[in-house]
View 1 (tube, rainbow, N blue to C red):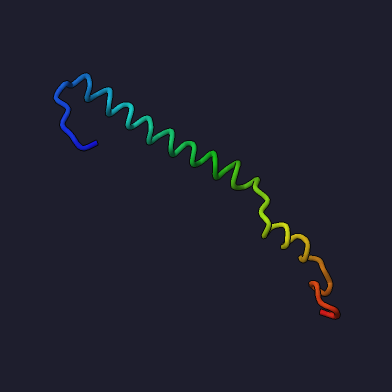
View 2 (cartoon, rainbow, N blue to C red):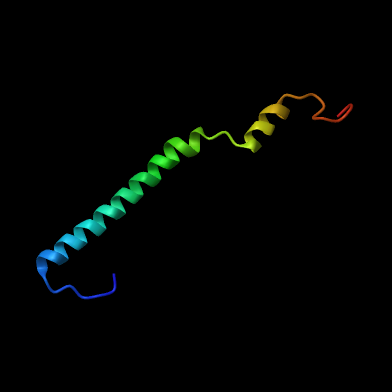
Length: 62
């Protein structure tokens, strides 16, 4: 934050808000990794799926 807070009540409030923001950031990061990232189907995933079982992988005779 970069300054000194002399009022104990204000300091407590600011530290609580800062701690809460760090907690929520970590929580949202976990949610992103657990849901969004895991459920995202990328173009790379698409091509891996398309060519995974292909006999010749797009070329005549392999």
